[in-house]
Each structure stands twice: as structure tokens, then as C-alpha cells.
Length: 288
Image 1 (tube, helix red, strand yellow):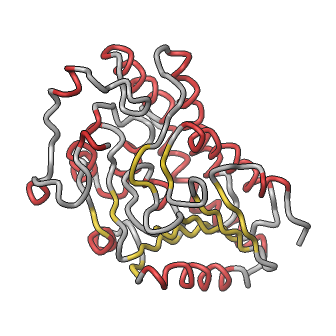
Image 2 (cartoon, rainbow, N blue to C red):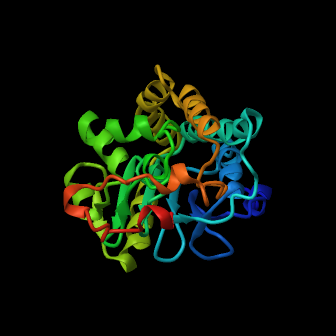
């Protein structure tokens, strides 16, 4: 195993720790606490995945968050998104995020440590997906906030949940708890919060006993279907273009808080699943 790679200290929103047998733990955070999702996070993921995938000493990878949530709210976006050129930056980052993620040729274990209401896809795209009993999955960043869900969630959730259930999930902001996610086949195991990382590491170290090529080629077999799905028809690139057109037409978005004070935003009547009509499972639209 080589010395500590330089990229381990390169990113402000990700922590890296690797054991002698090549198990790499990647931990999402904001200032060492739960993620407050913003432009800095978004900009770092694609290059980080490139670094991870280019390092053959990473034999098994574990993704997780910090504290008791994965990502459940926005922080400061910081960069105004007023023109197509502005939007092209996060659009490119989103395309590259998925491409680079699927180029990581090491088995991936996702260990969801709590509510994943924004970019929850990062906690269910593993080859093994674990969830804390406190985990909740939703898409709070798109349709319920006035945005077109075209950044890849339209592909992912229809594939994992089924077409009709996936569309309903995206349109209503449905919250799916860990046990329901397991019943639906989205996650494989549900464990107590204090058992989440021990279980993830147990599986990872067991995998690490296999030879390098078995690990790398098994991963390639598993991600090939995802590559095809994300490049088909309204893939991430075209989907993000549709999202941009919608944003430019109405002139605001929740990411950069340009929705504040906008009549067209305040009049939105958010859809809720019938059993979540009081939004008891999570945050209401105007708190997003």
C-alpha cells in the first residue's frame, strides 16, 4: 500500500481514510458536521470520484455521511444561477459525477447514516446498500421545490422503485423510511445507527480478502447497466438542459435562494403522499 495520497487532503467536503487492505471510507461533511449542501459540495464530487477511481490501491470503497443525517437541507449555494452559462457549471458537474462514479472499479458499499433528502442517490448506488434505522430517502431538491427532476434522479428512482412508483416518489416528495426501502429492494440491510459502520466495514474487509481483478471486474459487471441507463435518451446531460430551460423561464430556484419573495414560488401547492399529508416525515417545501 502506497503512502497517503495527496487527494486525501484535497477536498473540503469529503474525508478519506484507508486501511492496509485497501478499504477506503469516504465521508461527506460540512465543517466536520452533517452536510449543508451547496456549490462547493457539488463541485468536488466529480473530481473526487476521478481521484478515487484512478487509485488502484482503493480495493473496496465505503460511502457514508457525518452525524445523524446524510444530506437533508441546503446551505449556501453562493453562485447565482442566472444564465445558461451559470447553469452549465453544475450541469457539467452532475454529468461527470455519475460518469466518474461508475468508473470507480472497486466494489462500493453505501452506508446511509440518516435522512438522505437531497442527493439520496449517493446512498443507494452501491453494490451493497446499508441503512441506519434512522435513514429516510426522498427527493427534496427538485419537483417539490419547483425544479425539473432531470439530473439523474429521473433515471435512478424509476429504475429502483419501478416506473409508476418512481414518478410518484419524485412528484410528491414521498419519504421512504429504511424498512420500507428494504422492502422495496432499494437497500439490503437495516441496522441500528451504532452498528452501521461496523457492519459496512465488516463487509468491506471480507471483500478485501478477494484478489484485485475479481473485485475490479465484478464491479465492472455491476455498473455496466447503470452506464447504459444514464446515457439513454433523456440522460443526465439532456435532463439537466431541460431543468435549465425551466429555471431560465421562471427566473428563480431554491438552490441560490432566488425563489425568496417570488409570487410564482409562494403559490406552489406542494403535493404530498396521502399518508404524509401533514409532512410529518420531514420538512415542508418552504423550509427546503
